Amino acid sequence: MGVWDWIVTLFSHWQYWASGGGLGGAVLLILNLLQGLRGWKMNKLWQVVLFLVLFVIGASYMAWRDERKSVLDLQSTSKGLQQKLDDLTVPIFELEILQAHVSPIPSGHTQIVFVGDLKNKGADAAVIGNTWLAEIVTADGKTYKGSPALLTGTIDLCEGEKIRRFVPEDALDLKASDVIKTNGYKLGALGWTFPVDKNSVLNQQTAFKISAEAVRGTRLTFTESVGELMMHSGESVYLPGLKFPALLDKQTAGPSPCNLHKIREIK
Image 1 (cartoon, rainbow, N blue to C red):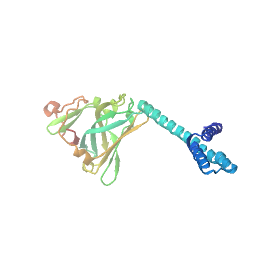
Image 2: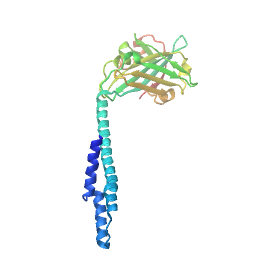
Image 3: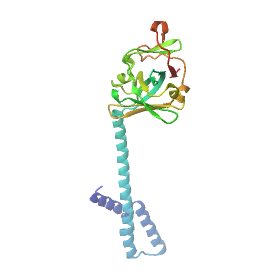
Image 4: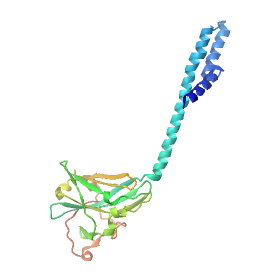
């Protein structure tokens, strides 16, 4: 509100009060009743004080209140428009790990293959393929960054007497590089190699952290401890988002090293 607009609003409220409206009118009515009942008459000085000072102060407050209400209404409208804009432009990605396969490799390092659902509860968006990062924070507070273990070929991992087979088409980073629609999801696998031994990884206080960046600039993050993952352990499940959704018999899959430790699987 400009100065002139404020003066016009102030005068409007002052005129309203002076003409007998609002709180000013109530004051005038009480004064007239007192003068009529007691024969008392307000002197001109107090009339000036009442009309030019007190009424101006009151009118100023009313003008401020109107301006304040306008500001709050504009803020509310702005927030509503921003929310609608966010709904149309901002993705909300959530990663849920369904399985985690942990296996040692000859170098003394550990390879982990995560199988998870990537859900999008916001605007349509894709995830930039080369922005996926993972790290492990072990129980002693040390952080180990993962090196991507790309699904460039077939990987067979043992689950009891069965085999869980992964192929390049199962890579979640590849799937998520295509747009995921609002309320849609992609299921796939992500692999990393960490420069830490398997026993440290399987400590229940060890935490996994996974993150990636969407094309629209928002970042998805996932953090969970090994203990929390183990709490959700269950029987093997059918995973329809994979090329081989069901477990394979070892005889069908052929010879595979059974050196993994599965630490999470939903029922």
